[in-house]
Amino acid sequence: MDSARANETDAADVLARAKAYPFPRPRSSVVLVGEHVFELVEVEPGELAAGRVRADGELVSLAEVAARAGAPAGDLAAPRRAVLAYGSNASPESLRWKFPDHVSVLPLLRGAAAGVDVVYSAHMSVYGSIPATLQASPATQVEVFVALLTDAQLERMTAWEINAAPERLDGLAVALECAPRPGELTAFVSRHGCLTAEGGEIAVAAVDAESRTYPAMTEPEVLEHARRVSAPDLSLDEFVLEGVRDYARARQYTERLKRSARPFIDPRERPASGEGRTTVRRGGDGKP
Image 1: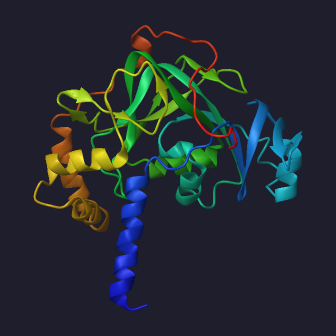
Image 2: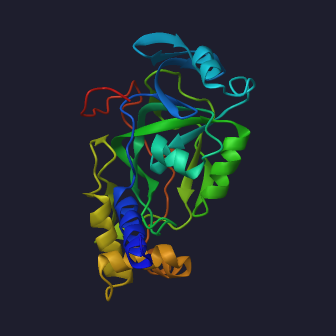
């Protein structure tokens, strides 16, 4: 392949990835074990080895699956931190791309958070997407995942999240499908605030929610909105490609998007409805 065609292929890959955010999400709780993804049926966060997963149509222990995959012996016994995963960190595909050497065993517990919604952040990511952040929304229940991370995995995630800061959200109304609500919970929240359109936050259309009050956009739609705000002389593809190839340019976009951004409001400071079991519905066949 000559260099011109290679550049065209690279550009097509960049654009496809940027517009695919927040990337494929499982339809149940899952656990990443090496290169495999298994449905996670039951788990006690303090006793991962005893968790039950569905493998080849049978229920087996997580310890058995991890042993078959050659996961380090101490992985299941290592202390874990509960981290809210609501954007690309809820996608096994994205986690493998971000942390190729840190996904020996990584549970993602599906559930719903009350009193909050997943909205767009006022910045461009290193891979060209307008990514997600959180914002209080008292009437809303939104699909989220809780990632149970070892110290090494959390360190790697923190290093990657250059545009977000870790916030303790202990006590957030989160109901999980296959595990108790975590007593301690961390979330990475945008340092740049929430992107706005016509004075209000913009929900991430690809993330399921009930009683959503913010208007929603898809990723291509929000990229077009961000382009109009921060680089109106460029085409959409030029906007994305220039931001990825020169992150200083992406920072310029971010500075323009931040001018009308709204700050994060802690959802625990507002009353939330529906703190019971998750009621967020999702289409599909129920497979992870």
